[in-house]
Amino acid sequence: MPTKNQILGRWGETLVAKKFACPRCKRFFALKRLPANFKCADIICDFCGYLAQVKTTSVTDESVVPKSILGAAWKPQRERMKAGIYFPLFLVLRSRTRSAVYYLPTEFQHPKIFKKRQPLSRSAKRAGWQGFTYNLGALSQHAIIRLDPSGNGRRV
Image 1 (cartoon, rainbow, N blue to C red):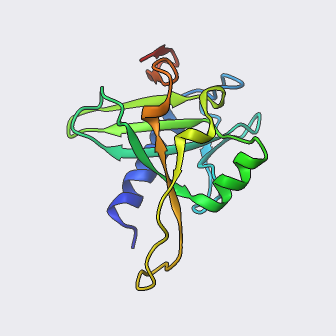
Image 2: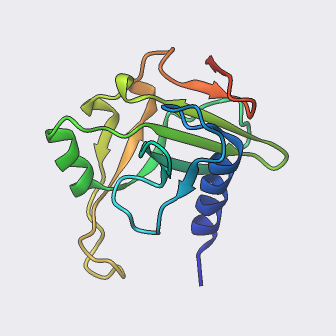
């Protein structure tokens, strides 16, 4: 049985795949959801192979990008950063009445925006697992682009 957060995450991934063109090849309806637990990426373009991460969160005001959001597993993220590999990020903000989609290209990503979290306690279901947060407050004010479903982006 999926959790409330998993349902929200799937909703965000589906929204991005259905409403937006691939940022690389510009094809609509080419973005597809990847299987659960695919490391560091949630969607792929089935034409050009473009990979991206999608993070969805509930907010009170979808026009305000949060200073930080939960990421995923720290170890694969750290390994990719050491290799100089970053995945673009679609950030889906959902309020009670609206949603907004933002985009963070790889060109604006750097190690300072990835903050490792404390490992889960020994009594946790996934004891020892360690995640990270995206420190969006460490980004330049023009790094995140608000997207609209027509495919046009604007800097926020």
